[in-house]
Length: 349
Length: 117
Image (tube, rainbow over all chains, first blue to last red; front, side, top):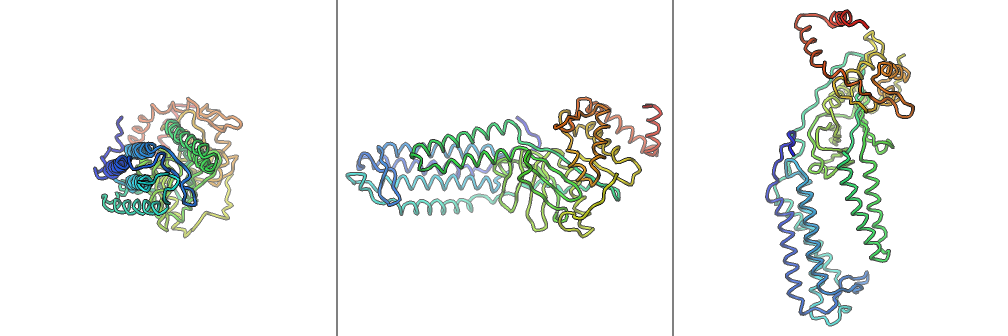
C-alpha cells in the first residue's frame, strides 16, 4: 500500500526499546525470579489479597508465572501493534505516551506479581502470607519514576502540525455571503475494527464481572461508554459560514463544537494521522490544548482560537472550507465582532 | 460544497444557489448519491429565506440533477456528474477569453447563441 501524501518515516529505535524491549526484559527478570523461588513456595500460593490485607484468593504457583509471562507478551504485543499502526513522523507526544505507558505497566505488574510471590517464600500455608499493600505503592512508584525517566530519555516530541499551511482566504464581493458544508465520516473498515475492539472489551469485562461473582460489575460501563463514543464519533457535519465554524455529530447533532468567527486567531490546513497525532478516531483530545474530530488520515482544517486552544477536523476539500473560514474570521475581526452574530434579522426574498 | 450568494449581483439568489450546486457537481466536489444540505440549514447559514433555497432545489430537480424525496432531502443523481468531462474545456475557454480580453458577459452571450435553451 502506498500513500503519497504522508511518506512513512521510521520511529527512532529508542521508542521501540522503551515500548517493547525494556518491558520484555522486566517480564523475563520477573519470571526468572519466580522460577528460582519455586522450591520455597507453599502450594497453592496466595494470588489475591482482600481489602483487609489478608489473602483471599489462591492458585498453584505456576499460575502466577504464567500470568506474568502472558500479560507481558500480550500487553507488550498490543502496545507494539498500536505503535506500528500509528504512522507519521515521530515520535509525537502520543508515540512517547504509548512507549512510557507500556514500560510503566510492565514494571507495575512485574514488581507486584513478583513481590506477591517473593513474600510467600518459606511460608508453610499461603493463608498466612503477609500483606501485599506496601508493594502496590512501591510498584506504582517504580512505574511512575521509570515512566518519567523514559519520557525525558526519549527524543523530544515532534510537533505533528509542522506541515500546517495557513489558509488562503476566499475573496467575497461586498455583501456576498458564502457557506461551506461537508460531511466527514470514519470509513466502514475502521468502524469494523473499532467495533471488534469494543467487542473484545465487552467480552473481557463480562468475564471479569462473572469471574468475580459480580463484584466487578461496574467494569461493564467501560464497553458501554466506548460504544456510545463510537456511535457519536462516526459521522460529522462540518459547516463554515459568516458566523464561524460548526461541527456537529450526526445524526443527533450532539456533541457539537462551535467556534465563533470572532474567536478565531488562525486557520490552517494540515495533514492528520489519526493514531500518531490523536491516538485514534472520533472525538479526540491531543496533548497541547488541542481537540479534534478525526475520521481518517488526510487533509484537515485546523483552527487556533485567540486564547491559544486548537481544534482540528479532518474533512475532504479542507482547503476550501479553511479558506472561507479565514474570510469569515478576518471580516469578523474588521467589524470588531466577538461571538456569534446576534440580532441579524436581515432576510432576502 | 461551497455555496456563494451575492444579493447585489442582480442574479436571483435561487439561481446563484443552483449554479453553485451545478458547479460543485461538475467539479466532482459533489458525487452522485450525496445529499445536499438541508434547506433550513442553508437558509440559516446564508441568512436567506428557506423558500429561496427550496426554489433552487426544485429547479435542480427539474433539470434532473437531484432527486427530491420527502424525508430524504435532495440527493444528487448520476446526471449531475455529466459536466465533469467538459470542465477542462471550459477552463481552457475561460483562459482564452481572458487572454483575448473578452468579458464574462460577452462570453456567456456567445455560449447562449451557440447553445440556445
